[in-house]
Every structure is written in C-alpha cells, then in structure tokens.
Length: 301
Image (cartoon, rainbow, N blue to C red):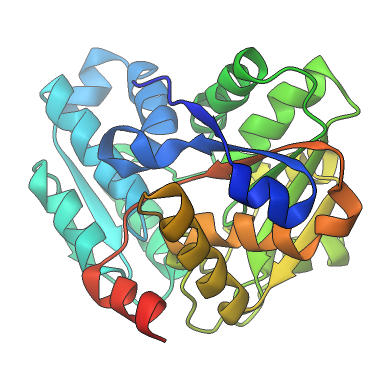
C-alpha cells in the first residue's frame, strides 16, 4: 500500500478562496483508493477461505484492486461487472488474472448476482463497500490525512455505495467531531443522497454519468447507509458539465489524470466555495482510471 501524498493547490485555493489540498489516491496502486479496503478484507480471511477463491462485483476500480491483491496472495477470484462499465477498468481487472463476468447494466444488479453466486458456491463475497473490513481499510485515508494536514475544516468525498466516506468520515469524526464531511454525488446518480433524505435505503433511477465509479444502486441493508447518517454533514449534487469543467481544470493545473468520481468532489467544492472561503479543505482525488474515449469527451466537449 502506498501512503499517498497530499498536495496543496494554489490554483483551486485562489479559485475558491479556501486553502485547498488534494489527497492523491489517483497515485495509489491500481490507480484508486479501492486497494485499501480490498487488502484489509482479504487479510482478514482464513487461509482456507482465501484458497477457495472469492467473488465480488464492481464497476471497475474495486475489481481491479481485488484482482491485484489476489494475485499478490496467490489466490483466485471472479468479478461481476456491469455491461456498461469502462473498458479500461475491465481490462485492469483482467490484467491481474481475475475472471470478469459481465452482468446487467447497473452496479446494484451486478452486486446482487455476485452475492447470490457466492452463497450458492459457498465462497466469500467481497463487497465493494458493504463490509466492515472494507470500510476500515478505506478509513486509512483519514488516518493519513490527519497526519499530513493539521486543522482540517472539511473534507469533500465522492459517494457511491458509501464505503469511502464511511471509513474516512468515521475516522476523522473520532479525532474531531467538528470536521465537516461532505458527500459529493452526480445529479445523474444521487442515490445515497436520496436515501439520506428518505431516511432509508431506496431505489432511485440513474442516468449515464462521467462518474461511473459512483453510479448505481445501494445494496439493501448496506451498513454504509447508517454510517453515512452518522458521519456525513451534507450532500452536494453536481451536473455533468460541472464535473467536466472540474476535471479539465485539475488536468490543466495539477498535471495529473483523474476519473469522473474525483471530478465530482472537485466540482462540489467549487459549487460550495463561498461557504468554505478562508477554511482549510481537503478533497479526495479517489482515482485516475479513465478511458481514452471518456477523456476525449471531457477535454473536447
């Protein structure tokens, strides 16, 4: 695991009036924060359970991290992936040896099928977010942030199933309950925000979004819903155009790649800039796995 750097951004600080730092999980192995949760989960399994193999579901990043970690442990696994998942993310899963099984057009449907098959085969299902060990693994980002930046006022985090924000928010809130944890979602797939507003996990229609890593439904009974209720102070929804502009600004000024989900967090900070002027803010750049086709759409639109 890499302890990823946290980088001050002069451009975004001047743009927003806040003191802005980026937590660069785009530099993590496999290009995403997901390896943290996967590694923690797999290391918690017994040797016999690990050698039976595991099953999971992913829109891409979780699956690539699982495949990478399994390869390092000499174990095998299968990943159920929505048929509309990014091609670069599917290739990343296959690169490290895990089997890819295309199923349905929504991450939630793939999760349900993967869990069903794991139960039928009597092997471990590794959830992308609905697992205590996965959430705890993602929480190591909060541990690193607290060491790297003193006196953080707020952290902006993209939200899909809620594993990342549950882990990071849970850790940081224990250190300082006054730190604001801001959940960032695309308007085209605002599922966790809608669940929070309803007070329960609900189904919500989703549209195509640049933030493919956060798209889709939430598994019934997901532990992350309760964590989000405890730790998330506010939700911000952003448009596809706001995501695109945020991604272009980051690429132009920070000179690094990022994926749509990371763009969501930047776009949310930009939209809320007036509320955070003069404050010290961290934005989790959760990943860099973007296909060339999507990148061309972003920069030439």
